Image (cartoon, rainbow over the protein chains, first blue to last red):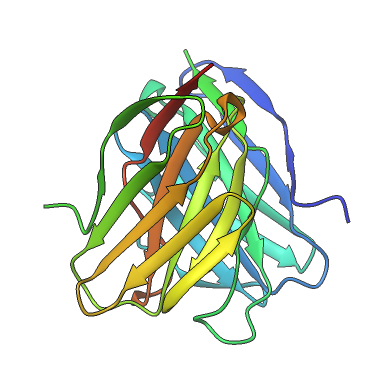
Length: 116
Length: 109
């Protein structure tokens, strides 16, 4: 299996532009997670899906952030409009939990976002 | 106070030394994860524990549910073990992970 695939790997954009990050989870996994990592705050969960349905989006920082999962093999995280403080590495992870206490999450390589 | 506390924040060791990284948490959990983040940024899941001890190669992870504490041990450390080690817990917060700040480990040859 190719693992979790994220694109792009690097994104540089200007403040105010729309940014879309993409994730393809491991086939057969029914949970998908979006995380953000910064020097100041470390790793933080933004949102997670189960069977394509958003379960908990309490970590999404504000309305400028939105996430979708139109099918089991694809998810997007969109920032509109982007701001310099959104600069971070964004990770996608997936898991195949048979029970909620036994899953292992598999992380993608991350997207390094720089907003100028 | 953070819900997940790791210590030490930074650790430098000589090749061959035995290393211990600690993780304490403040709420009931169903599972605890140890993750490794390589200098290039990739994150790998090392262990998932709900009780007792697990061993994989030179890595050993233990958890004490009553004391809300876990340790990650590395025996015969090697420069390639240099990475950030992150503790994360699940269970008091639905199905999501809450992360510690990480321990930066550098093993010198």
